Amino acid sequence: MAHHHDRHADGGGRRLLVVTVLNILITIAEVIGGIMANSLALLSDAVHNLSDTIAILLAYIARRISGKASNERKTFGYKRIEILAAFFNALVLIGISAFLVLEAIKRFQDPEPIKGLLMFVVATAGLLFNLFAVILLRKHSGRNLNIRSAYLHLIGDTLSSFVVILGSVLIYFFSIYWIDPLVTILISIYLIKEAWNIVKETADILMQSTPKGIDIPAIRKELEGIEGISNIHHVHVWALNDQDYHFECHADLEADQHVSATSSIREQMESLLSAKHGIGHVTVQFEFGACDDKATIHNGN
Image (cartoon, rainbow, N blue to C red; front, side, top):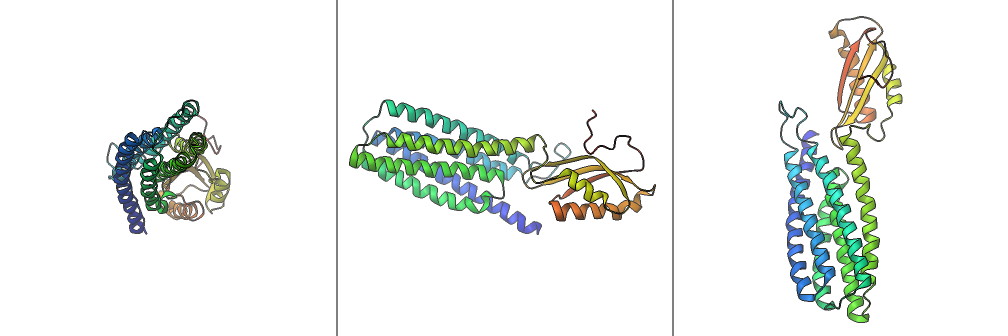
């Protein structure tokens, strides 16, 4: 099973590298095309793609680093670097989207004539490249916050290319300049909303908040139903990244006993937490009447 998971992780990393190369090619094409066509839309999209290229490259590097082994300085390994990259990527996407909104407002006020046909050709090439990149990452986007962040960047690029194509058609045939900034604003608002969700989710992980879907009172009740356990208290549940959940608690036993005798109780706890709640890392401090505070969450310093 572990080997299967690693194969998915490696596949996601290779695809990020391919997507990075594609984005570099798109950026170069749109810069050249934007200058030749006098298209602010293409140049703005090129800036968008360049920023996304940097963000996706960071995602790929983080993906590689996260596989490094644990050591005495990094006892949890480097897995959380993917969360930091996803957090940074989402903030960058919000910044880019806000910039596009400002640029769109300016273009409402002062539209400039451009070469619609050349704009259409370059934007169509960009759209095709972006669609291919989106397809490459779609399979992995639901498994990993870091890849999901990069995937959102690509969705934004794809939509931007579509907007530029739409604008080029309307400009070429009807000289309608205002449609491009209008759709750009709508897309940017959507991207800001989606990126903000990633910011909140990654911030929760970095703050070691209880993962969504984890009901601590219910877990406590289930664990206290195991024979030999009198009370569960001082519970902590957090996520190392978006896949690895950790759980720790104090378990007050019904009777004083040797440490070796607690092995079966611990195994039952681990089995329950893994099967019902997807928690793979469990740390238990067994006690017998040692804590006066039996609260689920310990508020002391």
